[in-house]
Every structure is written in structure tokens, then in C-alpha cells.
Length: 201
Image 1 (cartoon, one colour):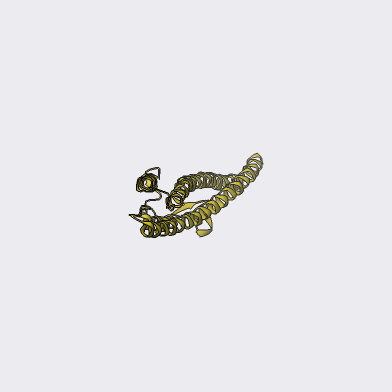
Image 2: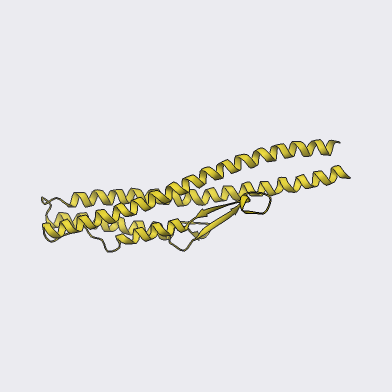
């Protein structure tokens, strides 16, 4: 009877930890989805920066600047589209509506058995991207072209810095979750072996 009780308790622990592994994998999927979308936003911002630099050339005609600005505006719309449409399991991750998401990654209660992905950082990134709203890289003359260039570069660099910081945080939490999964799998293997010994006696 004592052996059955111990084996039953171990089974509960193993099942709880198996579900915790699933939760941790779900958390990794969320972090990877958000980070992947931010990677694409980074690529777009870098292209926008190139366009801004290219526009600041007095050899450009008004038509040249207008063509560069057309692509710039198209890129800006795509950044907003990515922020508004990046979802996983029906949850928007980058539009500012998500907050912190907590995942149970252990079979017991308490904060030591939970990991939180801070999507409020993504909201800060969304705020940095809002600095690009209404931005243009056209100018009617050299002075206004210079002002547009300076404002665009400043806003783009602020957005890149915010995204890079959030991406670093998401990468760190993915590493932590991977380590958690490895540890839980190790614990489960040992618990299953121990349970087998108890059941055999």
C-alpha cells in the first residue's frame, strides 16, 4: 500500500511536469513569434534608414526624392501592419494590447515554478515606432530636406534601439525556457525510473 501511494504521488509529479514542459514550449513559441516579427521590422527600419540617407543628396531631383519617399512610406505601412497582425493562438503580440504572459513551468505552486514573458516591452517598442508616424524624407529645398533627414534618422534609430532591446529580452527568456525544459525532462526521466523501482517492489 505504501508503494502504491508513493508511485501515485510520483505519477502526479511526472504528469504535472509533462504539462509544464508543454507550457514552456508554448512560451517559446510566443517569444519566437514576437522576436521573428521584430526581426522583420528591424530589416524594414534598416531599409528606411538607407532611403533617408539616399534622400539627403542635393543631386536628387524633386521627383527622385518623391520616389524615395514613396518607398519610405510603403515600408512604414508594413511596419505598422506587422505590429497589428502578429498573432499566436488569437493573441496579438505587438500591437500594444498584450501585457505580461505568465507560464506555469513546474508541477508545484509558487513563483519559482512560473516564467513571465514581458510583452509590455513590446508595447514600449510600439511607442518608439509611433515616433515614425507622419515622417517624411522629402523636402522642397536643401534646408527642408536636411530637417526631414535629421528627424527621420533620429526616429528610426530610436525605434531600432527599442526593438533591439526587446529582442534581446525575448532571446534571454527563450534560453531560460529551453534550460527549464531540459531540467524538467531530466527530472521526469529520473522520476519515471524511481517510480518503476517502487512499483516493482
